[in-house]
Length: 301
Image (tube, rainbow, N blue to C red; front, side, top):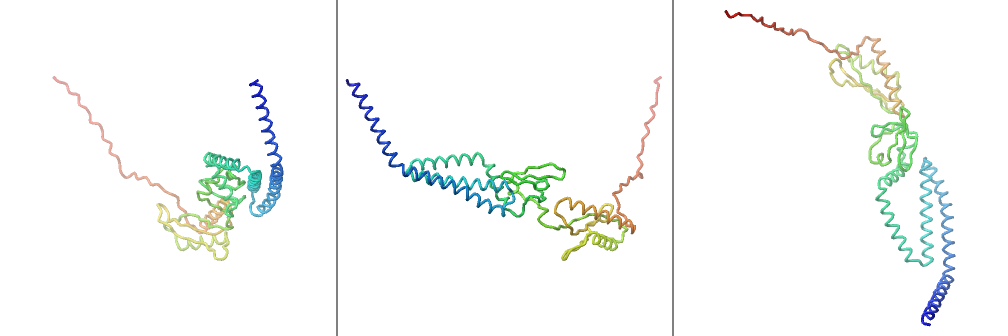
């Protein structure tokens, strides 16, 4: 009898608890429906806000990958806000606090584990908005030079002159200097040369300036510069500097090649010698060869 009484009491307690839960569900049903509606509104809003932000970024960011990732991040943030608002409408303050605390711990762990990746990601976002670096520019960085063919959230991709690709982490471009040939339409090119010691230096200077000015017309506020540098081992060396159209390293090489050919032709026409290093071997010091002394054979008698 006592066992039957305990079972009956347990069943009655279970039904009472279920009735209380049912009452709680009925009372919370309006808030539950409202929370679902609010969460749905945030999802729909994230879609349209993402499209709007994508259109704005279209005029600011040239990289498709950067625009897509930025829009996705904005959508995730809006949906997360809607999720927390929905939890608040359900009066789940304890769950909300636990979720926020857990998200903080997980975020910290992920941040520590992916420190380098996150650094490259934020660096990629910064690079995408920098006017000093765009797709199609020719840059040099850490010994690598090439055309920028892609900028993503991890790295930039260069296509070098030998048609090979180089992947450079974004953080390296943020932390280290790089040279961009494509940001300015004209650059100064320098050519080194030397003439023989018996040359007329004034004539060499005048002839070199005329030759370069004829091959490379200078714009306003630009001029060809000629300076003697040093007395070399076999020549008097000089440098000539001039302006020309340059947007990549290849343009500098072609300009320098053209200038060298023009200077050589002009010097040959006026019998100006461009000496090459000469090594003189002096044979005046004769080495004395010591003849070995003849050994005398003696016989002891």
